Length: 153
Image (cartoon, rainbow, N blue to C red; front, top):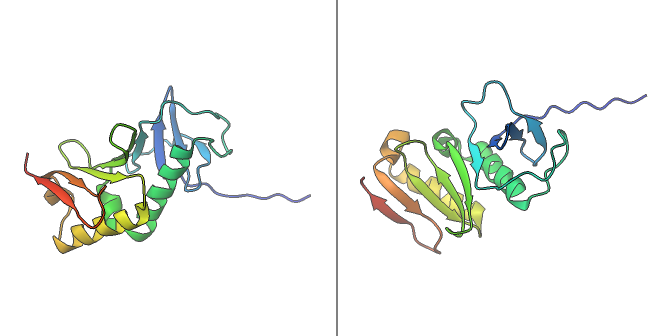
């Protein structure tokens, strides 16, 4: 008899009828009891699979998990700022939100690794934290070779 045990660590929450979680490769998990530090995935209309321990079928959920996994591993400053990852067809892709009264960061849907790297460089160059980030209404990274910002509220 061979028993394989694999620990799954939630990195994203999804609020549908109930709260669910997803790990870094898109495996569906029950919602954790303490989830105050996990970003919420929004903009996904519903989940196709409700089988815990199985991979979710929606590309957006798997891609969202990959985005947050990358941010958690390589960009801890950004990870601390994110409260929500939103998928929006109308806004042409992914949007990061930094909480109530915070900034909106438009990532788009292409070349996401590079766009997150640019966001990290922007934050470091300006020595920003979550409070300083609130001074921007939005940061738009959807365009090549430029960062567009709207300061102030």
